[in-house]
Amino acid sequence: MIGQVMRRAWILVALGISLPAFAGEVALNRAELIRSLLPSVVNLSVRKEVPVTTNPVVASQPMGGDSDTVKSFVGSGFVLDPSGLIATNYHVVDGAFDIAATLSDGTVLPARTLHASRLADLAIVQVDAGHPLTPVQWGDSTKLRVGDQVFAIGNPLGIGVSVSAGIVSGLNRNVEGSPYDDYIQTDAAINHGNSGGPLFDMDGHVVGVDTALVSPTAASAGLGLAIPADSARFVLGRLMQYGWVNPGWLGVKVQQVTPDLAAAMGSSQVQGSVVSWVFPESPAQKAGLAIGDVILRYGDATPGDERALLRDIVRTPVGQSVQVGLLRDGKPQTVPVTIESWPRERWEARDAPMTVERPKIKVPADLGLSLKAVPTERRANLGLEDGLTGVLVTGVLAGTDAAQRGMTEGDVILRVQDRPVATAGDVQQAIGAQREAHRSYAMLLVLPKVRKVPGPQWVALRLSAPSG
Image 1 (cartoon, rainbow, N blue to C red):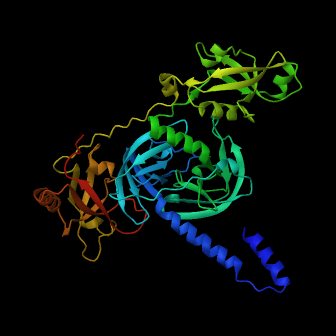
Image 2: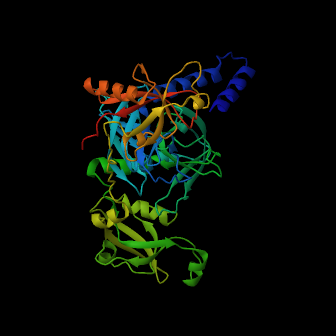
Image 3: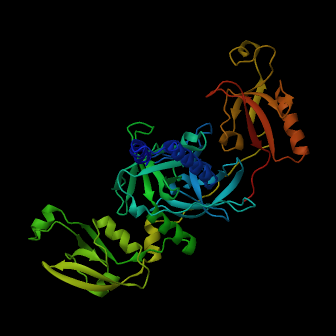
């Protein structure tokens, strides 16, 4: 775009016509456009009970700093509806018992998963901001071409809202082996934490949902993947309307015709999808489709591969009649089929609804902390110099809020609220004062045994077990 403007500018200058700085104007307008989109993008922080295995191709970020049983992760999302509906990836919120959404103005809101589809890797979470949020505008991903400029906005590595720009590097990528894969590939930097964030075209319309990265390391290698907007919009719309995808069902298993399969069928045409199974009582069986049929056309579409055919089928409205063009024994036929709703119990066997149980948290009177005064000979090694006082943590009871928040043997408590502490009694007295004040949490200033960054940090510990 900028290159085209500059070429036009040089042509007009050569003709003696003076012009403003077109490239500068384009850059300014683009910056203004990006800034206008930031209120529609949301950072998500979640807590999940482990063990959690981080898939190397997904783009949600484990943040650490928790316990062996609970981990914190970050991802991204974008506003679907002013009422507080936010789109993200399924894998961002999968198993999350706590979700916090941070808006562009810094407001942090509790969120809950409303609907989710594991197969589509999409989910909707809900927040109550107390005012309308700014939704995104959808674009048409079917019009994307390799080389088109795009940009991603998200929360890479948990550092906060960031923007990266690039081009569409490829289309219809199949990296996870799903029969529905249709990823947009982009060299716009997508890192862990970008998952669920929007991929925009240069008009500021969402053309994809940033979902995964392919890299030999943990960082971006320029191979980012996004779910196309037309797929995401269909799935999210169905989730909002029905609570599940409610896909159209033909009732066949198909596979791509390869040169070998074509040769085995005595055909010179390497195209279409060959039927490998027809389910009993399915629309396909009712219409007379048979094993060995080669589907070439579905309605007005000529699917490029079996994944495109399956996507066309699931998007077909239930009850609609579709003309299926096929080859049977080498002869062309057209068969009308009435699409039915996928049997829900069969669909949910593949795309089970998300169920999350909050881990049971113990909050004993002493918060599960075993404490003792810091031995004089250990003060320097623990970082207690220049008269600084503290209390050594000698043990943390498993399953407590303190354990889940990452406190461990070897930590040193420096303060509880605004009180410096030097003995176990000081700590328990300060905790008791918080309970008497009817506070839900106590703030502990802790010098961690394992320090990712220098210095102490505040930890808020529950004073009673959560209800529900």
